[in-house]
Length: 68
Image (cartoon, rainbow, N blue to C red; front, side):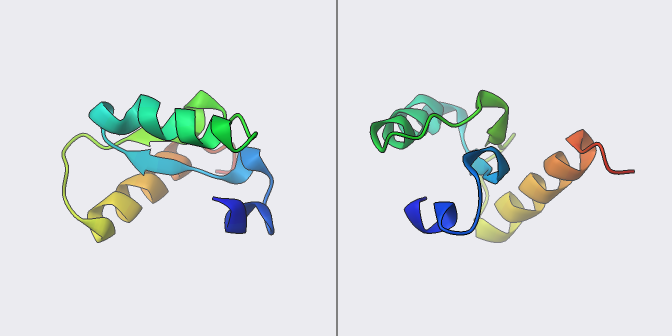
């Protein structure tokens, strides 16, 4: 997270996690002093592995993006 902040604003960072870890992840980020927008915490519908989580995150960002 801290490395991401070196090149991006907190509003540009998205986290993909599962429902059980959602509040744990948000809490840890807030402990670092960076409250992340709740819409930037994406909950994957089913736990898979890294590649499906990345793909899910990309599709959600694209779907919610203002860019056509």
